[in-house]
Image (cartoon, rainbow, N blue to C red; front, top):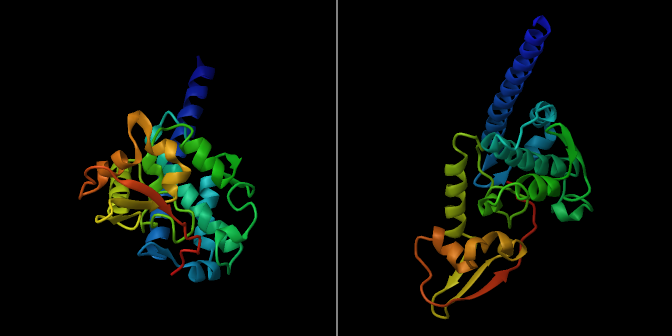
Length: 237
């Protein structure tokens, strides 16, 4: 009986520590984004001169383990982790003009985070898209380029995540993500919608249906859809 009590006590202590570490991660990520992001642009010059705040957050994140069963914490953790690691990757190569200037930036460079060794692509495609059918991820995962949806100056938090996903998706759909030519019934959209077409055409929807789910001024009738080139220039202030 004593051994069982000890085991339970250790497990509860471990869970409590994990919860504290996760809360600390979210709080410090929030402070970092608030200090270094404005109007969707990142203060890379400032971070490069003093990277200790970013490194401290990633060190905390290294030992955090979140189960996908705990969906909101899992999603919020990995969205923030992705955005922070993109900044880390760019800082490691700074000064730079684009993440694409560095071979393997997304698919080869590995980071120790969340109790595993992983790449940016694996976070996006395996941990997030692979576990959840959620097209709104594309509007909060920021690849460090101007063509990406803008990075917000807050952390994504489990208790506000759904509202944040909804807000960022609406901003994109009603902003620079699409370009509408009403005279010719043509709509151009970011190549994100081309690359991940399957995410935007689930449950019998097509791309226009997805757009109309979030667009204030609906696209009525038939529209010709095309894609405008992605701008991979670094999203620096």
